[in-house]
Image (tube, rainbow, N blue to C red; front, side, top):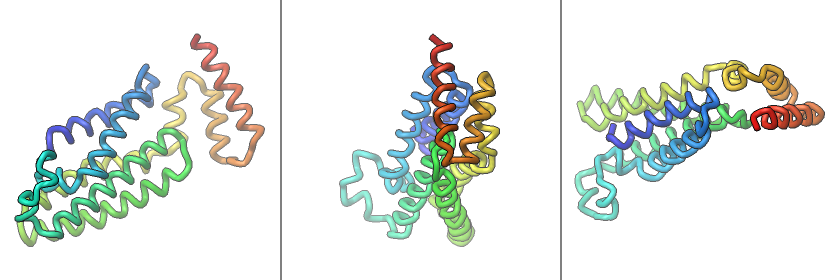
Length: 196
């Protein structure tokens, strides 16, 4: 992994902890680190995974010794990582469809891990070894968030406001209950007015 990638992943994991513990600016740090990681993986994965410097992306000579398979694998890994990151974001913010994003990302990552492992055993190419390391790190983070029960996330995030946490859990079970949504809004107002 590149230094910038290691730093961004580290900040991303740290920001998840900040966010879940309601530390001031935790949400902001989480949003910035997630956005940066999304940008890097979605738009620059083909370059970063193939050791192409950012300033050389538009130079033809940067791609002379690369096989098309490596570029395709890098793009697919970048796409899968982006799906995982969006899934983590959606789950932590209790947004619907987190399950879909995490499933798509994790399935693609799993299939790519098998392919990269097979290619690494066959060719001993460092590209596939580095891809496997990335898959283990990002896929592992995504898998851990995926299997962690959403009710437990709510309990952690809102441990100081158990009534609000219970309302949120109930709203997940009854998404069409508009009276419940009004109660949640009222409880939010109480929480934020108590802080001021």
